[in-house]
Every structure is written in structure tokens, then in C-alpha cells.
Length: 473
Ligand SMILES: [Zn+2]
Image (cartoon, rainbow, N blue to C red; front, side):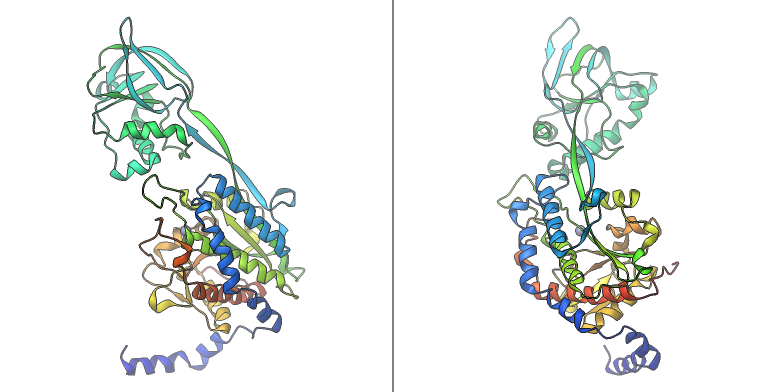
């Protein structure tokens, strides 16, 4: 920066109006200073090194490890002295997530009055057991007909990354055959040559049930056949079992610190982070996507802030609700569940401070944080006024801050009209969504300092009689 411009900027920034805005937050009292000292590098390290350990297997939704991680967060909330924010005063808001897998027995195909036909795997069963005889039609003929029970696709192109993501294969199939569902199609055959990646994917499908979004799962049986045979025009007999369904309990973890003001404590500041990550991959020496930065750091921040807030002898005027979400990586599912069945009234949430990736700063942003969607409310200015009391800056990151506003759980709250933003102090590094996102690579002093800054900022917002306001932009 040109030195003269620098001086002008300094003079402008330090004019009387700017000064009064920056010093609007009252000085931190002794109680708050003591609370901040609980957010130490040692405590941050012990939390993050557990949550991001290989034993947590990447905290996939759903998985036993995500369930263990949610129990850990509940234990931390309990130990901090928070009240449970779920039904019956528990710490859990539970949802039964349905996942599916193909039927155990596979499929049986034969020509009517003829030979049985070997198939190369089953990508999906139908909603019900199928036992039918019908003539196999081409896709084009099926689309021109009124009904087409068995349809054969000559080929199916899937993206290369589908080898690691069976959900992507099933979504590709679902999109391709959508129009056939209006023709009462019960079975789709897909011809595969020797190079096709579909049979090995079909072989792995019975190992793990998969979560498939509505509209992105085949609603009929999908059977792979060799490209050496062409069943079109033949009358086939086909038996396929129904797609198996598995219920998986997944949990948002919710802890509440009641505010000290009889009126304002009806309102809450909601401090959140997503607990889930993307699980494991099937190749390589290191197969665990640890999700240390994304987002064990955010969860570490949430439980550290719970410790600090709960230690205050004088509680903030507003209540503070602490939450970790499941299913962010699958499409903000846990936070959508929270806002659809809110355990705390949405109209009484003064602001959502969501925390995402605070462990690996860019070189010029050590010990600073930034807020997404800055222009949409005055929360960033308020948080910065509070955090500057201990010298931590919260700034408007203009390059990606707007784009990332809609990419995390805060956006589920934005959709419902709540002032909600994500706070980050990280970078879009090469280890993002890779096994290399390990806790050993985090900058623990930076992360600790940022969490302390978020405490000073959130305390100011929780204690401020005037709630943050949406800007209407
Ligand atoms: Zn994330």
C-alpha cells in the first residue's frame, strides 16, 4: 500500500465517529477475562486431537463414529453445566435417517421357456418385490409406449469420480430413467462391457447402506447385464427383492445456558458448528478423511465457548444455545431438521454464529477471523467491536465471503429469516476434503486466539440490549 494513502486511511479510520463505533463495546470485566483464560491451547489441542483422530473415521453421516462424537459433545455440554435443549431435557434432537441397500438375494433372470441369463450385479431393488414376465424394450420404444415394464439401456456414462461415490452412480441412473417412471417401468437393465466401472460398484453396494436424496435414487430395480447379450425383444422372467431400508438415528446436540435477564433471556444467541465430515475412502495408505479443519475445529470452538460462557459468575443477559449439527456435508441436513422442528423458537434467536474451519489461516490473516455474507446484517460489525477488545479482528473477506454465505448451516437459518452467518479463520487448502486434513497440521495458537476473539465478540452480542439487525440487502 502507498504510504500516503495509508496515512489518509489511518486518519479517516481514527476520526471521532469511527473511534466511537470501535469503542462502543464496554471493557471486558474480570469475570470475562477469567472465562477467556479457560480457552487455552492445551484444552483446544486435547479436544481437536480426539475429534479428528483416525478412530473417528471421518465422522460420516450416518456412522457409529458420528454417534460417538455426538455423545462426546453431549458429555462436554453436561460437564460445562448446560441444560439439555432436546426433548425431555436431553442433549439430543434425534432424527431417523433412512438409508438403503440392494436386496440380499440379487436378481434372477431367464428367458421365458429358455435359458437363465447371468447378470453382472444389482444397483438397486424396486420399492416392492418384483416377479414378472414381460418383453424387453429399448429406451426409445419405451418412451413412445404407454407402458414399458422392462427397459434395456445400451450403455450408461458415469463421471470418473463415481468410482469412489456410489451415490453419484445411483443419482446418474435416477436422472437418466426419470421419464421411464411415468411408463410404470419396474426393471431397467443396463448393458456393461468389460471396462465398465458399474459391476465393481454393484459388488460393493451390499457392504454399506447409503443415504440417497429424494429424486436422486432409482425408483425401480436396476440390473447390470453383459454387453455380450442383447435381451431387447425377448420375453424375460425376472425376480428381484425389494430395496432394503435401514433406519439410522442421527443427532443434533443442543445445550442451553439460560440468560440472566428475565426478559432478554427469552432470546438466544445460537452458537453452532457441524460435527459430521465425509467418512473414509476405499483406496490409499491413509483412507480416513479426518476433517480436522473441516469441521472438528468449529466443534472444538463450540465446546470451548460453552466452557467459557458457563464459567461466567454473571451470565449474559440473553440465553446462549450451543448446537452441533449432523449431515452438513450431505446438504445442510441437520440444520434443516433443526429449523423445521425448532427446539428453540426461531423468532427468539437474535443471531446464529456458525463456526467453520478456523484452524489453518492464510499467511496475512493469523489470529483474525472473517464472517460470510457481511453485507446482510450488522452482526460482523458487532462481533468485531466485541472481539477487538482482546485485539482479535473479525473482517469482511470480500473474495469468497459472499459465495460461502449460502454454503454452510447458517443458511438454513437465513432461509427462515434469522440473522445467521458463518465465521471462519481458515483457508481453502489442498487438504480440503482429503485424508491430509489432520489435526497435526492445524495452527493451534491461531485457532485458540480466534476462539477467544469469538468469545469476546459473542459475549458483547449476548449482552447487548439491541439485537443484531438484518440489513435487507
Ligand atoms: Zn464444513
